[in-house]
Structure formats: C-alpha cells, structure tokens
Image 1 (cartoon, rainbow, N blue to C red):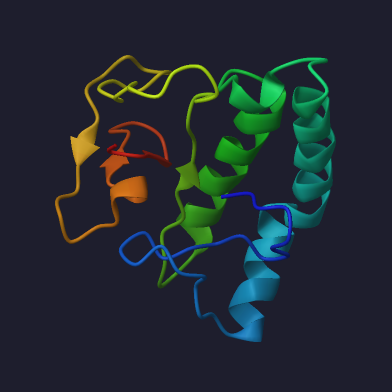
Image 2: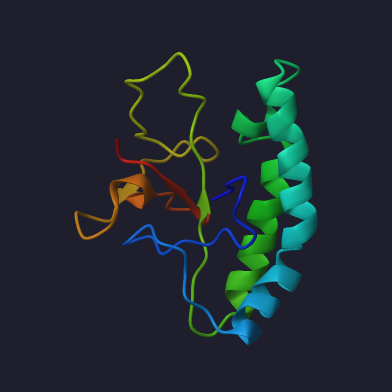
Length: 135
C-alpha cells in the first residue's frame, strides 16, 4: 500500500500495521520490487490525480500497477517466509458504497480471508497477488 509518508509501505494484512522485517528482508523486497522507483512513479501519478490530470492511480490495468504486480509475482516465487500482496482500491471520492466482488483483472470472484484479517485487506484475487478492502 502506498502512503505519502511511508518509506517502506508493506503492511501485515491481518493487523494492517507496518510489517516488522529484518534489514535483510527489507533490502531483498526493496530490490526485487524496484520499490524506490515504484514509489517515485506512484507519487507522481498520485499528484496528477490530485490535480485532475489523470486517474492512473485507480486504473488497475495501467503499467504503474501491472509492473508492480509482475514484480510481486516474481518476488513471491523467490521469498522463503512471506507472501506479498498488492493493495488496490477504486477512487472512492464519489463512490462510497462500492463493494469488491470480482478481481478486476481476471473477473473471477474474490476470496474472503475471513474476520481474522483487517477489513482493508480481507479480499484477495484467486489469480493475482492483489488484495482489496472488504468494506
């Protein structure tokens, strides 16, 4: 999940708190995901959204998101003790009552991980390492 003041934006899906990882794990993830470059790109696209220039930050099919999903898939194959999911949501500026039901890429029904997971991270795609809010 991208947050403007967070330099390492990985959160535990159950608690929704910043992950507690060793320096080695953080370094591995940062390198594998090209995280610093992605954060820079996302920050630029977020600013464009704020200025009504475009809405790529909310388009799951944009290269911004597609590249990170590909990197996560590769990283998950190499990682030993963790699985990374990409958090995604629609632009809720004008749509408060939207509820995710299907993966926006595959169209397949999302899997509900249950109430032991934070509601912001409770739904996952059956085909891609993506998580969605349940409310």
